Image (cartoon, rainbow, N blue to C red):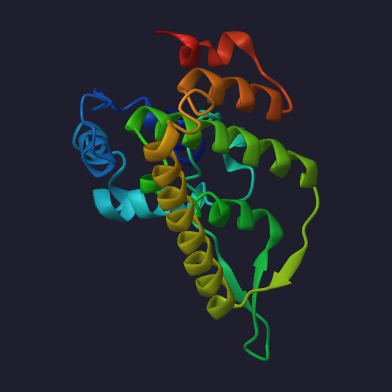
Length: 208
């Protein structure tokens, strides 16, 4: 949840009544609770902290919301894909929402260290969001097959596990790929893959 989403959801005149933003809390619900508690009851029409938080999440739950609200492009998607049904009960999903599903295909165990996984998640987010930009202004739907998606997740997970076992066995034999898969070389690979590499924005990944 970002400050921008709150500012766009609650009129500025009402937000002026808030004496403390509550940003010292890490939990979103506690942040919202602090805002409501310090508003002199001017925001009581928004209900409880949990009700307001749920409405805020619904409010920012749409394709390219990260761009509209100014979310960090290095952060994974917070959007929850919405499954729609036609009059015959057939489920459909917006193509843009599929990017949110793709980010969950790679499991943490596939990468060796927390640092490598954090790098991958950030680069993955940038890459997926850059491709999502290509369908900006296009609203197309595809038939959503939950069973097929479940099989795809399971299959992808199996492939990752097999790859980890194979690479580990090769390393034990002759230190296979020890240099190729270093953090620095992985970063170089991502910089080539990403459509735009903004040195100023992503330089934190190049720090020691």
